[in-house]
Image 1 (cartoon, rainbow, N blue to C red):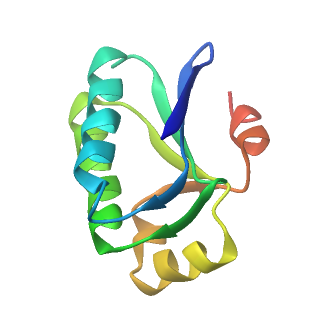
Image 2: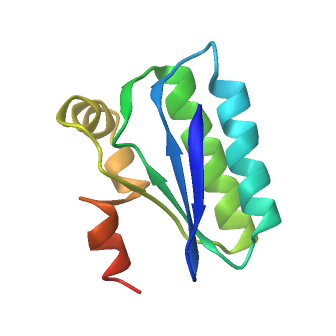
Image 3: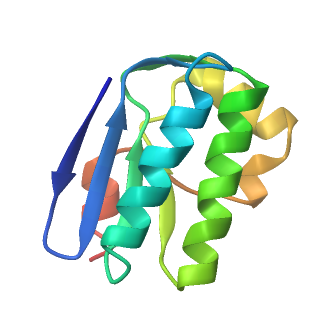
Length: 110
């Protein structure tokens, strides 16, 4: 369903296809496990290959972001499609998440 790549100061989590009620719980669990296994690593969720996210998928991202905050870990999103960006902006989650245009832009921050 996704690819997990570890980089020197951060972990990249790359989900694929859609994040919906059908798989949101498993997606959240994987994000949470990744955060807990690597609490000293920042987590970048690369949404380049995600076609659709419903409300359950958004809640999984929000919950994972809260876990990261509780661990004192940086949680960011990147490569968001224009249609997903509209959803994030309409729900004002662009004020919650740190969002980068691409992995490259994120890497430039390190």
